[in-house]
Image (cartoon, rainbow over all chains, first blue to last red; front, side):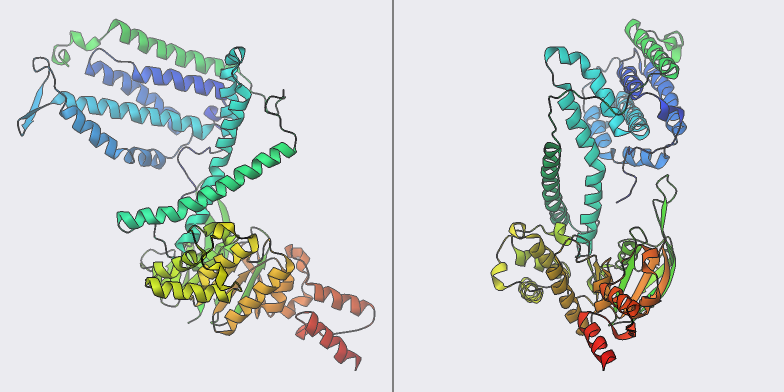
Length: 287
Length: 283
């Protein structure tokens, strides 16, 4: 097991790290909207997503993240990419507006199939990059505090925001602990001759059982102990409580929110009016 | 063949903000059949040293050699087939009970031997032997490991390693969380195994146990060997500076000295040998 699990918080001190977690969550949502806005043509789509990619790369390198982490998460999507490509290849298209690439066993494959796949993959990569930046620059507990803040309006309709936030922060809090358990159990079973890397599918499944059963046992024991510890210290899920950490919204947060907001608004506007500078340019007009 | 550590360095999470050096140049040789105790404060590198033996960790530089198996920072020198090494070196982790996962004790103990190629019957045979050896009786064979007490689970987990018949048994804090009687029983078991020729490497904080059983004691501090020698030579060393407790019998010898009875600590290992020394001094 690597100690660098995907998107784990890394305590550097950059501008992105110092931003209020609420700002970062809002910015993530705004970028997601911008990424998934449909554009009039392929050319426009790739232009907009290219701009977002530049922003993503800038943020990614600015928050001192490793390229390796990103590459690994992209590589882990290979099967999905292949599956998408196959689905798009066999999607029937309007022959009059599409561009034929080649014919495979009587099935007409259009260039649009590849473009559609590329667009989805690019969107997924962008999504992964922004999410990685969020989780790697924000302490998990700050994230839950921010989520709880966003949920406060729901208190009016009786939604137990505090309980929800507590559940979430406990779940997040225990991810590293469980990762440590995984590491420990894998080591113990490896020295009993289990091979998690090599072997047939069946022996791999058997190997996983030797990991999962102890992991569940550990986790149940631990959650039971935690519940007892909380209760013995008088935890009341409905009690009113003060906070140790306070979130603070600075001028830099305001600027970040305004900039991302403006950018998302621009992308939305462009999408809704179907603006496309390439339409004037003959060659790309039909794409 | 002895076990050799050749200028071994180990760094966790190298190149990240979490980077921490665990071992800073360990070089030593462990003779077969010896009973070595590794002691030192938390974070001094004991567990890392133990895990390097089994190639669960790979050194950042230097190499660890066990017989024909080489665990080296140099990829070209590193042995490919590690299964043989893992059969040779049995590693009992701290709180080993979490490795139990099968529905009966005998199956769980037989799991290791089976992974190393023993047939079902052979593995069960070895499992039964190991279970009896750790001091549990035949009524445990068919029981669920999850329904046992903490001490019994520990014994089953240790049996799971013993059943693999390792040449080297590495024990990481095997007595942590056990009551004094269970600790003594465990120690007696380790001595018995050692007497059969198995090399034992014991990682522990319990200096009483270490003094009683080990033939050689290695003190680690900040990833370096700071003391290496016969356990009774440690009488002269200020163990508290390594966050270790002085063995009770040594404290007793100290008190006797203050009150006018000088004893040579070289043969004092436990209460019995202390009593013998006092008796001899009186005569």
